[in-house]
Image 1: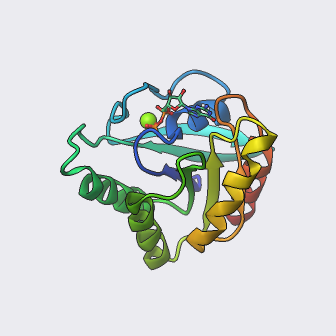
Image 2: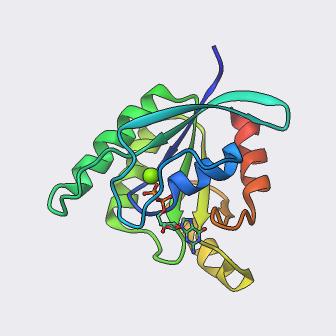
Length: 162
Ligand code: GDP
Ligand code: MG
């Protein structure tokens, strides 16, 4: 069986956009509103000659009251099924309480994590990315899933722990 790399994070941070970028095609469902990725969707993927299963996550309802618990629940399932995790945070927004909740799950899991500081579309966003050192998950990789910036370094780091 191929190693499993799961992409987790709260809604709207750009998980599906990143998955599409890694796959090199438009497949994962992206939308301006959160909650359009149903549960967990697996794709066969390849990077630098390594084959693996890439898992996009979502599936929570657009229910503001319950969204925090829902994100945590879905993230926990995906993490448990993964060999390594790409944790996506919106670097422009910065860490939220929901992000912190997922961080605690990641720590508890003991799984290797690569921190994706997404939506760093230009050099001016690098400082936002560096703020994510505060999450205690190691080096934040500045990425623009939308434009492809930084995805090579992120994937290289992921391949090193997968
Ligand atoms: P998901 O809910 O985490 O899967 O997020 P999506 O991939 O559906 O993206 C949510 C929104 O963020 C969409 O409007 C994307 O176009 C936008 N987005 C994703 N990545 C980036 C990025 O790197 N830069 C910018 N500016 N927007 C992004
Ligand atoms: Mg999605």
